[in-house]
Image (tube, rainbow, N blue to C red; front, side, top):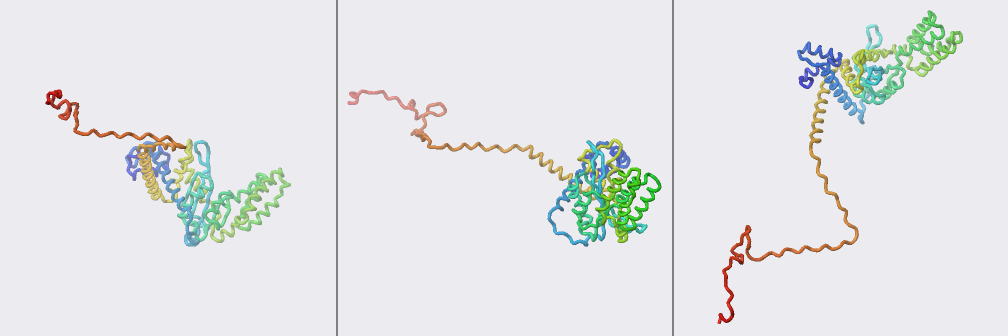
Length: 396
């Protein structure tokens, strides 16, 4: 059982449980340690460790949400990429969206393009506001608020922009290039059909979007010959939807200018994080997670992917010990008898009351005791000598 394992063995089993199915984790653990545990034991230990780690992370985030003196911008890393996105995971009761944060240091890749390195992750099954609050621990650890510049590469979801507003309002906003480019293909197919003409037009506009001013691509969208389409109404709807998505985000589409400054234009860091951080463990045939355990696994998975497993394990172990002490204290208090309730207060009577008769004090009997232990004493009249009564004439 996990309770009988030493802390180092518990850490190894929890790490395996965060990486592998619980049955496989138990088998690998037994193979390399010689200690046999069941899949259920591996599951309980892994989930308990994850819950404790998530609780410790929440406590850190809560401590950072209070008022504090802001550190000056530029005192942290020179350039960071921040990307957030959501993906679905199976839970008991249906599929739910997990939100994931990826933070990386921007550097030039082998081909000269900007890329995010030293990636770290944070994930939770939570609404946008709660996720933004809980993520403050990771953004603080990576220096998002103090970085020289932050490039926020996200898709068009409003909550993603809200996350950047919360953690770095002056972040440079970049609409993920793949999300922008994929809006062109449906327009081409609606106008020219599924053929070479449609593919050629879409490819040319994607190239323009990447290397030229975005206004040229928006102009080309407005001029597509929707009237000559096989279904003019459908072609007009596809064109208007693409323009409605891209036009409000014009300043986020200047990919040529972003690339020239060495800034990233793709959110592949968080997109790949969905696959190898969250879904690689949480998704699978027959897997359905209790909602309370999703965050537990996410905390362990992001710790592994971010290269901070040792710190996460120490925080989890400390939190579990504190929880054990709290439980023991609560049990001791529950066993203590409740203090006796004070007697009820009787209200004073209203109005004049009759005067109570005073008690008559007992009059102490003078002289020695006449009865002791049920027997007459020497002072009892029975013990006095008998003197017969004589008439008065006898005294003369």
